[in-house]
Length: 449
Ligand code: GDP
Image 1 (cartoon, helix red, strand yellow):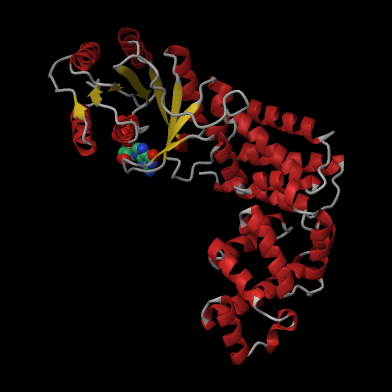
Image 2 (image 1 turned 135 degrees about the vertical axis):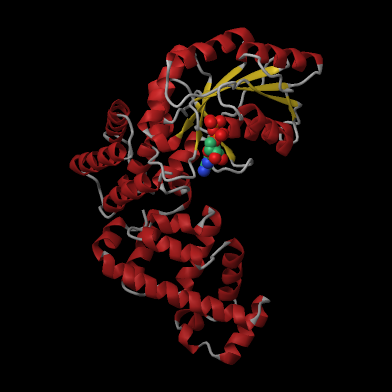
């Protein structure tokens, strides 16, 4: 759901990365663009202001790390600010799932507007608690407004393979809730999921009903289900439920759609409640834990780069990297350079991550990933290159059939693997030439860092 925002921020960082040392003006300009990108993604204005202020404060007066560029440090600072906005932080980092730390039967009250995905999410939660946590779960629908609601939940319970509260016609939500809790106590259920009725919009009657059920059942969790596609409205809905009912967590559904993502970023600041789970599809297993750091990574579209920046400080020697960048720029990148890169990559973990650090390469990253350069292939490539003579490494053109056979035998692979390596090296060289055309200045000044 974060594609658009992600694309915009990437553009900002791409431009930033083409510069060497960053001036305060560069950072200010980048922050202006970050601000626009966030607003366009529908992030609430106070949240945007707070986020950019935090980034500015930290970007100025940052100690400059030896092995990474100032631009990368800005990426990291923005990332950390996003994590905080999403509700992660030193104090409460990590995934926040459903809290089951209470005496059984643990009550989970599901609240939200009609169509938000409440019933589906109840089923998803039941499936997860049954499977992952080995809990005995009871599902109960308190929705007496929508004719088929109770039947819908009963069907869902059958699909999931958990019990559902027998339907008794004519009962109101409070009676049904009491019956559910009672049955759960008698039959030793671990968890009771109470699915309340929704309305098309916030109204007093709905709030009063939900609040009454909450007071009567004293659930351990009150989870508000909101539809990410409704953007800023989802945040307003959450604020209303928080004020009138009080929620312990938020489940954001339809993140598989093309929602702009701003709601996720605003939710914590506006409601104070953490997002606990994400609904990512109609299937019952499409439920994800909410990890602020992973979401921030997803938004920046640089999944690994932040940890890479952290690790880069230890593993990549800047001078070495600059020398390599210069050679690449002159078109002098050889199989020897490739082999030494493979060693570094082995230490760093991810090739696409390293490539992400090269200025201007963002768009080509996908191409490389498509070329399927995974770890096993990297190891095989290192072995093949080590079976070549120094001359062959510098002039791969001379590697014809008989040399290929020797190299393959020496490294324990097939001739076609040698061919594949040479082909990929060719592609890589061609790509570098194109990259140089894109931005020789950026490559020279930005180096690898
Ligand atoms: P309720 O009225 O809040 O109980 O909403 P439902 O659970 O009946 O869901 C309404 C519709 O949204 C159904 O068609 C669901 O399959 C669909 N839905 C629920 N969660 C998700 C989700 O995370 N992604 C997508 N794409 N659809 C969902």
